[in-house]
Image (cartoon, rainbow, N blue to C red; front, top):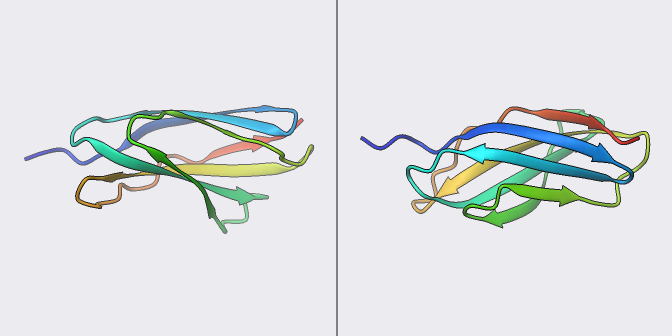
Length: 95
């Protein structure tokens, strides 16, 4: 039986107007795409911000508000369109 795709860990680094997200993936089965979700103010209301191809493991969110707090998580979809559980949530405050 094949294991299901998971995002093993998600990290975020805040810079002026920018957040750089990086993560690690399991690779069996092969990931087809990944979706990045963001909540402004960490209110629990998340909006999909990007869909990335299979093994991309870094994404930059630009033009954010200084002093604002954002929360992010990542999901992975495989070739059969099965979606993983959400990754851990990363909270970042823009300096």
